[in-house]
Length: 243
Image (cartoon, rainbow, N blue to C red; front, side, top):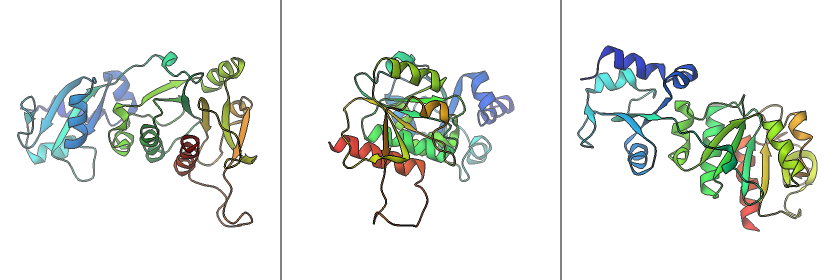
């Protein structure tokens, strides 16, 4: 039986402070939870309104509504340990790594994590002021990719400076960059994506060695000023993988 104290603890996980204090996050939905059960992430508690899994604690639909973070509660919810990854796993000298500078919209972050999974990018390095990847909205938007993509939080400018010093190619998008469709691209390096409204900050931009531009069509199109950061990430990752 789920207690009032259990409900309070689960509801506290909607807040970043609560997630940090408990070291856990919420995952909802049968498909996502089934992926979690097959992965290495540790599930602390599993709740369901129907007997989907032998280890699940059965609760009523009303109780599920009280603990769910969704507008329409699902039939299952898991409380999962937050994984901790060694930043050294993000090795742009060998692979492509995404770096996010102040990406603050949970939907954008979740979509970018899903894109990284699709394009075989295992690591994302985020600035400390990015959205929390274990925010329930982000977790749902990843559609399970949060299980397979390692998301790191660090002093991004300092991390990029170290990659720059090591001679690793660092790519970023700018209005004065080179056309991505004619630019020579490498199989490794860092792809930096910036804030929704302000782009890549000056400190991080100073480390970028390869400035890219996604041209509109036609070239003199005077419509939208910029692309959504998640859409821009999809275009860039697709072009890197196409080569």
